[in-house]
Image 1: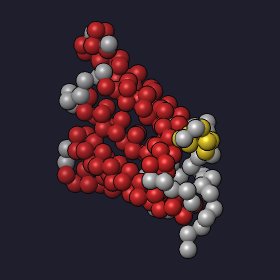
Image 2 (image 1 turned 30 degrees about the vertical axis):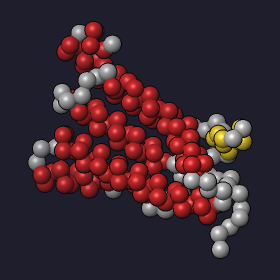
Image 3 (image 1 turned 90 degrees about the vertical axis):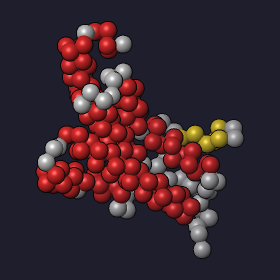
Image 4 (image 1 turned 135 degrees about the vertical axis):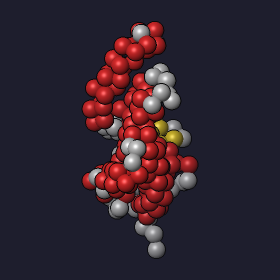
Length: 171
């Protein structure tokens, strides 16, 4: 029998605001908002329902992360044997524990970092214009403020773009 306990979760302390429920201030605003909206859309009001929704969302986020990592390594590593080893290493990275029972919102963060890394690799391969990278970085940084550590990488890519194509291409 599901618990009738109201949702006051590790994912967010929720604040009632009119007809919608908004997450409180946290260090991962987009990730918290996404999971909060998921709860509202599917009308989940109990902790058991919340955990079920997290499982489904984490499986989808994990699958999308694996796809991003696969394509990133396909761009960066040429030899199939090396690519397989790199793929295994990256997926065994300690953050993968988040997909194996740790109920939190970091699955969205890992996916955002993987997607940003894929866009950066596509840019380095000449298949993605630089103008998409600042917006992608902003989305990553809003997913979790700790990902601001990727800023030096974005700045290096901006410097490289300026050196190769001039300052006009940065706009």
